Amino acid sequence: MIKLRTKVLTSIAVGIIWTFVAAVVTSFTMSFATGLPYRPDPLWIVLWGALGGVIMGHGRIILTGALLVVALAGMLNLGIVAADDPTAMFANIFTHVLAALAAVGGTHIITKVAPNGPLNRHEFEEVVLRLLTAFGYVFFTAIVVIPFYVMVMTSFKNQSELVQNPLDFSLDLSKGWDLFRSYVELFMHFDFGIYLLNSLGISVLTVLITLLFSIPGAYAVARLRFTGRAAFSRSILLIYMVPMIVLALPIYIAFSLTGLRNSLLGIVLIYPVTTIPVALYMLQGYFRGLPSEVEEAGLMDGLSRLGVIWKITLPLSLPALASVSLYVFMIAWNEFLLAFMLLDDPQKFTLTRGIASLNSSEIPRQHLMAGAVIATVPIMALFLGLERFMTKGLTAGSVKG
Image (tube, rainbow, N blue to C red; front, side, top):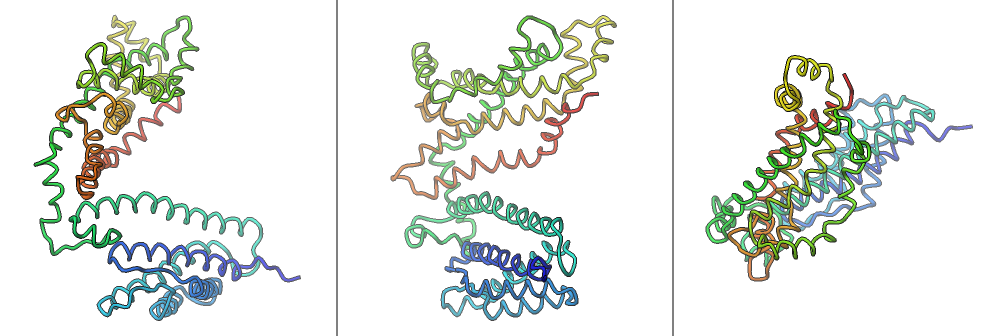
């Protein structure tokens, strides 16, 4: 009986699937980069995907020759068709070669773990898992990168370009510094400098207030013994079971009666309510992981409980404090519902509230996209720069001792 589960047949199936993925991704990429309507042809994708799979599944063909054959085939036609524009000839050839190299290279990486000949169940499942993993990387990268790319490219357009072709996301470098015209106008005519300062100040104050209350609260839950300690520890995050939209009307009424509505003080008071529970939950787990013997030694040396927290616990908890501070800062920076509900004065708008005010038919769309970029890039850069500290702080208390 001939086994159907061989490396050649598996490579053919993987080649067809991965060539389709490579062709779609390359088509989207080149369409965004050049403004030309690239689209993959399923018939040619199946043909060249099967060819690449046969080459990758044949153990006597080296990778260099396989790349050359499929790349040359792609130059003729990989099923990616662009507009009939003589000036786009180089872009067309580059697109075909790029898709071909991505297809055959990905097929090789996915199937290289499989030995030649028949595959057992374990070897076949490993190839399938590698294919799914690679597809997951591409898919989730695309759903993150594509919207961000569209947002950034739209912010560089002017009104006439958006009206003429709203799907053209290519970049015209000949405009020079005029590309940033939307950003300049936001700061000169829409008070975005004030929005940035308001968001920065509110976020920093939210972090400080949150730490001020969550540090002693988390320490008490982790170290002290009192009635209801276990119930309190388990119910810290119950506030997140109540949607914020349910609390919106009571908060609006209470703030209106007390004169806190339309004030930055009111925002600073309400934001920590949403961040203290998660900070308590994160810090108590970390405090439990710290060796209690160090704190007991401090108490024996004459330190008070507050002195132990200040001089021993906090220095040992810097990674956790950094991660909690970053997380709380991100929550406060991106918060929209409460700011939209409580703030009416443009001079008191946070960044998210200011961006919402740009969503109007009277304001060009590129200004809205530029505002979104201004709100996204700083927090993205902060997160990427401090990601390793945040990960370290979140996991440092997971193992005791």
